[in-house]
Length: 124
Image (tube, rainbow, N blue to C red):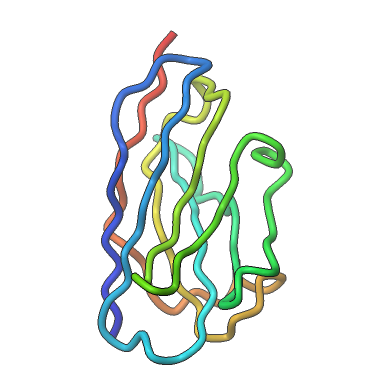
């Protein structure tokens, strides 16, 4: 079993930045990819970014490429999502996810565990 706990969500003005964190615990001795999704009210869950175990491979959705950066620190089993130039349409619940397949290209369809989500609200 794996537990994922997100933090760092909150209120931010449009144009501002926010960094989300997700700490993994439990069965974390195997290599795994980590990533982020979000879900806005009335919309489907949307993939944002993924990163493999070594951190050398990342994959981004076009909607956030250039604005969001995913990175991880394996020493503390944590993945981060740095979000810059935030827009009102970035308002959503952000979810951390884990895939033991460790393949960023297939991450969207291979999630093994989900976090509980953290709310991000961008106001103008």
